[in-house]
Image (tube, rainbow, N blue to C red; front, side, top):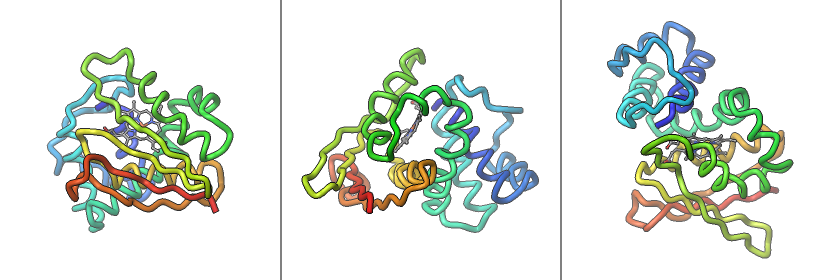
Length: 180
Ligand code: HEM
């Protein structure tokens, strides 16, 4: 996965648990990279190992680390490195989320072998937004955090409930998003 993903884990661990904790995470994960280049591709296994190590170092369950990481990413790491996309991707949480399929297609177009997540959407008459997530990576707890992070970025309340999940045998994960 692109370096931005690992960079986000680094920034989240440093911000929440300190620079020493990050050194511990790197060593537990067997990571010898001196830094992450945002646009370079790194093995998915490295990302998984970093998340697992962050769970061990922080004492939080893996799923909690994934959600917290997603929440941190949007208003911090992604906003900083992808400012142009933020200007173009919408002026409300709903609009921003509806643009995410297109943004991922564009942001990974120039990388050989990239496998961006795919989203398709259903907008229900009562205002709920269903976001269907297709990815071989199955990072739905991260996705839940990212959706909450979009709310944080816009300073608006966003709620999310996972109503279908690949890990429970469904063909894709579905996030039911509400904007109360
Ligand atoms: C403008 C903001 C964003 C940009 C530029 C961006 C870009 C990226 C990039 C480059 C990757 C790595 C893909 C790869 O290496 O194959 C990624 C992964 C991912 N992004 Fe974003 N992203 C943004 C915001 C979001 C938001 C708001 C969500 C969800 C609501 C999201 C969901 C995901 C997920 C779930 C992954 C993990 C990959 C997977 O599941 O297969 N992203 N993103």
